[in-house]
Structure formats: C-alpha cells, structure tokens
Length: 123
Picture (cartoon, rainbow, N blue to C red):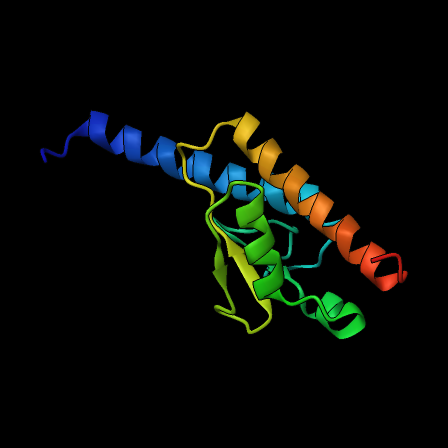
C-alpha cells in the first residue's frame, strides 16, 4: 500500500468516525448501563466499555448473557470481560452507519428492559 496525503486523510477520517460512533453509543446507552473509562470531559476513545456487573449483582444476568442475547438480535457477540471482568467492550468500526448504530443501541436498550423484567419478577 502506498501511503500519501490522501491515504493519511482517509485514515484520519476513519479514526474520527470510529471515535464519534463509540461516543454516540456511550451517550445513548449511559441511561441504561454504566460506561467505564470516560475521560474528564465524559468522552470515550474508539471503544466504549459497558459495565454489566451491577445487573449481574442485582438480577443475575451476566455480560455473557447480554452478549448471547445480542446474537439473537443479529449482532456478532462483542468482546466480554476485557479489559474489565463483567463488562462488554463495544468497538464500532468506521464502516458502521448511523442506522446500524441505532439498531445496536435499540437492542441494548431492549436487553436492559428485559433485565428489568427479570428483576421485577415478571420473567
């Protein structure tokens, strides 16, 4: 691969989009799940780490349960328990469009709602 100013601009753009996407997911899911490793300004880098430990403690639903449930929604299971046990690491790539980010967030919100039904004894 030949590296030139055009290639550098493409890499910069891909990095910007990945960071923006991760921060979109983190902000969208923050009302439902704690997000770890935010900076002093409240932003994450190119990935966001969703903390499932509270749900596991309160309800018994684990990060692996959430990852497996995401498969039911048509998503590849994300990284679990790295870098923190009991978490899910979400790394959206620059190729994920807004509709796919929305679909992912909606799935995660539904999973949080399902965990609440378990907590309430309805499930």
